[in-house]
Amino acid sequence: MTILITGASSGIGYATAIELAVQNHHVIAVARSKDKLENLKKECIKLNAQAGITILAADISSDEGRTAILDVLNKIGLDVLVNNAGYLVTKPFEELTQTDWQEVYQTNVFSLVAVTQICLPYLKKSKQAHVVNITSMGGVQGSSKFGGLSAYSSSKGAVSILTECLAEELKDKNISVNALAMGAVETPMLNKAFPGYKAPLTSATAAEFIAWFAVNGRNLFNGKILPVSMSTP
Image (tube, rainbow, N blue to C red; front, side, top):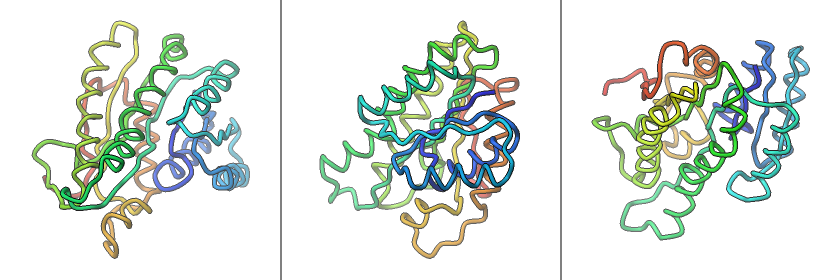
């Protein structure tokens, strides 16, 4: 399978790219940092990933970045899209600026929408098409909420509802759409939000499940927001 992952330069995205590559899927790893993507490719080569990995240093919020993705898809095609890229601002609600809101929603919602739209023509050609949106327990109704994360959590809530809408709209095109609402996972983003907190899951452990779900989840689920968390709610 050919699987595109955004936000692949660190954390869950990085670990998931490695996991899928060593399972002999061809990974298209997209992120802004070319140096980190080069390190990812070197690690995949060291682990003898047979299907190979295509790295693409691109800003998915820009027209140029999305054009670069299209150029790759025209050559390789696509079976699975993992929308993992995310942006976090930790700040009390009353201190959030318009720029803060725009930056969070630009990456977490608007860029996700744009990337998904450009991937659709290629997913329609696949018999295994699956869109997996990586969201957060903070974006799930009824879950515990935390101060300073209103912009981030509300953007992830938007992704959750969008997932349900897309699943309904795309089911006749044989494209399944699901979301994984991640709980606490040891990543740079979690450390930024909760300095000093020790998460119960490592990125590598979470990546094992995400990789399995990306490949197999469409056979069991569609339009679902699945909590991936060690705690309740």
